[in-house]
Length: 207
Ligand code: GRF
Image (cartoon, rainbow, N blue to C red; front, side, top):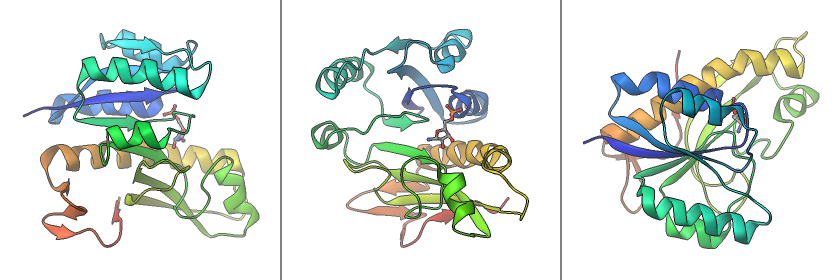
């Protein structure tokens, strides 16, 4: 059975594009794209791929979430993917889709929740950085980490070069993680499991 995704975005949409590119060879389908930003490039990407898409006016969290929840009630997604979605969801919203919302975040969580992750990793003298896919709860970049990918920080890396190195890995990590959920390899039933074993630490992308 094909897993239906709702993808929430705020901007460029390169992770959305990666999901759409992987879709033909996968058992998931992007059913609908929702953006809180009418100018988001990701809405054009959805449009170009013939994917239903909506702009939700996020005047404040209550109104934005109400509109998004109405849309989601019609979409009936199996999984909600936050891909560059820059709003923190409320406990009420998250409780309606418990363990059914994931987010891609550009750091090795629990390190560096929030913004400017690349610069913060460099400033701390880290030699390794990365990205995480985690379950969304009502705190910023906080829920259980399902999967991670690593990238080395070279002495002459800037936040920009590090972001460039990481983004392709982010795309692979997100698509791979969604594929693993769609295929049932990664599953949730009173806790998360990988191939039937409790997921005690994040699955790591080796490539
Ligand atoms: C990515 O770096 C993602 O990890 C972060 O926001 C960025 C979104 O990029 N949450 P895009 O919109 O998918 O191109």
